[in-house]
Image 1: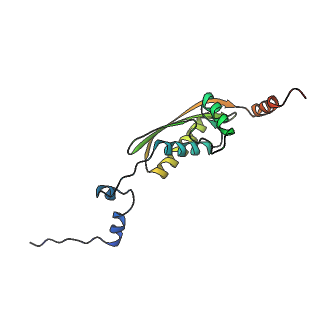
Image 2 (image 1 turned 90 degrees about the horizontal axis):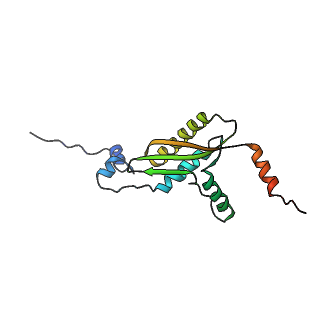
Image 3 (image 1 turned 135 degrees about the horizontal axis):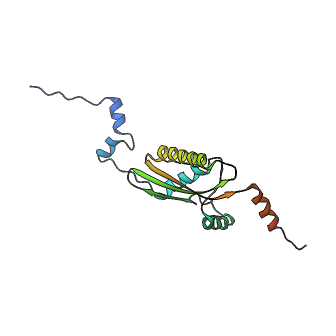
Length: 155
């Protein structure tokens, strides 16, 4: 009885070297780990992209965020986002302030879909859940009131 062995074709050889492929990992060619902060930033950016999101974070996080804005450097993209990242899965919690007049259930669904799409496509992790907490509603008049109160009352 003769045994036949097949040589890998060019397409299977290329598939063997694909980064992140199961075969590459099984053959001991390395591993990839993704830090929690990476997933937090991706989720924060994805949540901010949804129309109807005024800001991220609860009251305390937004106050700290306003202070950070005055300092030089990049803004905190992880504000209002907490994640748990495992080897193959991630869970995301997003705290938001919604614009007044937006249907909150539709807004939460849009955030959930955008975060899942962004995290899964960029990291390859399966997103098991995205919990959205609405801490406040922003009125357009709030901006006018803040601008008026920051002006000096004495000239």
